[in-house]
Length: 417
Ligand SMILES: [Zn+2]
Ligand SMILES: [Zn+2]
Image (tube, rainbow, N blue to C red; front, side, top):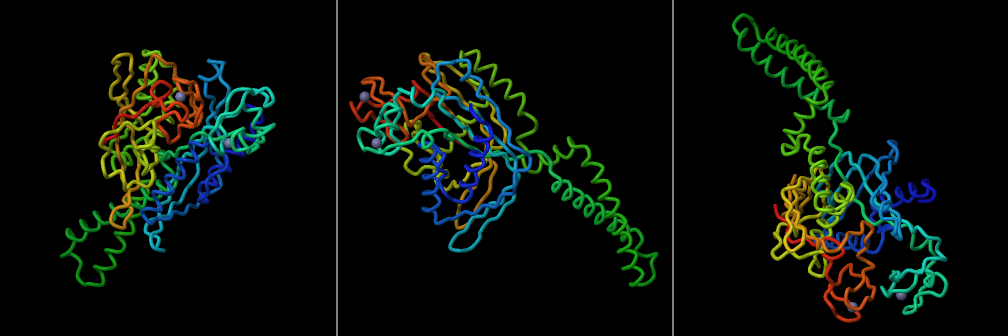
């Protein structure tokens, strides 16, 4: 990839646009389609959202998509970028703020760019305007053969192909303070109550009683916060307490499940990096769940989707995926995966925030290799070879052959609670 600073700027512009409620220009066609379908869901439910984000002074990090370097034949190069910042999310219904929440999140983006020099790029690319295929260099020189729109390369590359948000599960200073105050109140109330009942008769008048209670509470409160501060230095302990209260199903299974997934995928000849897999699963889930026209999606093969997903308005990833099982039938690889999410639902005029663990069943035809830079907006028909945009159509527009996504990528057979 070229100049890293440009990609970091693109990264930042992307999430700023997104949180300003506009569809980021840098999103590719598939991602724009997703962002718009989520917007439609909110409109349907008569909801608006607003975001405040603080400046990301923690810096932007990046990791290579290692797989693409091994293959070496790919047309694009992609990289994952992320940073951590505070986000305050508000939902507005009929002019009233009905929900507000501040949380610390990691914001991930996958950015891809073209490897070749633009004037050498003679591979087919689907016109972002009408979807018809042209050679990439033609799009720039003469414009699209069908609709005539001209594109300069900067309009087409680089692009963001995916994004997701992940809750920061580490203990923040704010959490530490809250924890200390809780410890103070708890010890204050318990010890003062004990003091009152054990010394009730030995204190003669009401004034002395009130004064002694206040003094005892003040002392025990201070002692309690001090103990809380000592405890919070031990990060592990506080993490466990936090896990029990908020995320009882997640206690440090992150790394072990990562290793297990990596090991298992390799056994089945799937040379996929965990990071690729993580962002793929998340994009499959939200593309299907946050779309009211989901039957037009080639990745959706779900028969009866739980009706509760119709009220879903946002998905935040909770850092953990766990492999349930993996099997191969007729060389079709079927993966059952637990995905831990923090979801917002809009139910009876209220936002309900819930920790969900979803079981996702996904399938790939293992006769065909997976290209980690596969784009749904530029697929090739296996029958006539025609190139088309399959973002929301299941048939080849030239010969009518049903498009079989499981040969190129993943198809989802089920998502359930
Ligand atoms: Zn066109
Ligand atoms: Zn065709």
